[in-house]
Each structure stands twice: as structure tokens, then as C-alpha cells.
Amino acid sequence: MAMPETVTMPRPAGRVSSGLLYSLRVAVTAQAAALLVAASFAGQAVESEPMIEAHVLAGMAVHLVALVQIVLAVLVWRPGRGAGWPALASVALFVVGGLQHVTWLWLGAHLPAGVTLFGLITAVLVWAWSPAAARRR
Image 1 (tube, helix red, strand yellow):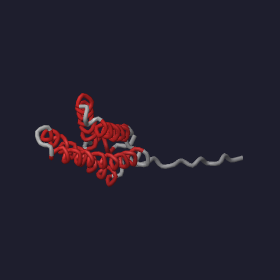
Image 2: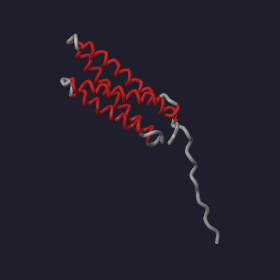
Image 3: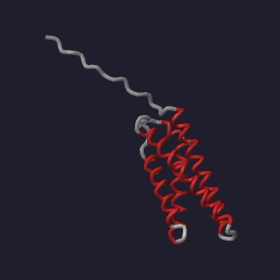
Image 4: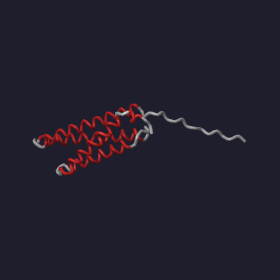
């Protein structure tokens, strides 16, 4: 009796979808730019009351871009079969950004959270624009 042949699935290509990866790169770059703007307004807000509102609005933009970034990072990770840590870092950016809104009166917590945001976005930004981002896992 003949044995049935096994069907093997073709291996996926070795690269993440370029459109999806480019979208994530744009979101991460927008996140970094929004953080820079928010930080510049923070320095001015110390001296000028109207700049506090500009700082808060820039912080809201950071938070909204973080939501988009989470969605794109998860899409690169799960269906795109890319690296998973940027999705986790994007969630951390969103959570720490939320803490920024809560701790705005406590500079002892607000400033370290801001530094954490810069560290996380720098790591994701460097990864997103590196050739390693396009490789599947």
C-alpha cells in the first residue's frame, strides 16, 4: 500500500510587507517629532502660562499617535511576522504617556517618565529605520 504524500506549505518570504513597515516608520517618526515638540513646550511652559496649554495639546498628540503606532506595530508583529518587542515598546509608550497626563503636577514623576518616553521612542525609531526591521522572525 502506498503512503499518502505530505503537503508542505511554502515558507513565507524573508521580509515584512514594505507598505506595513513604511507605515510603522512614519508613525514612529511622527511620535518622535511630537515628543520633541512637547518637550520644547515644556521648557517654555515653566516661564509662560499660555505655553502650558500648548504642552498639554502636544502631549495629547503624542498619546494619539501612540495608539496608531500600537496598531501598526502589532500588525508588523503578528500577521507580518516581524519582531514583537516594538509592539510591547509601543504599548509602554502609550502607558507612560498616560502617566504623563496623570503626574503633570508632580515633577518628580513627570520628568523621569518623559525621559523614559524618549528612551523608548529612540529605541523603536532606530529599529524601525534599520534593515533588521524588514526581516521576518
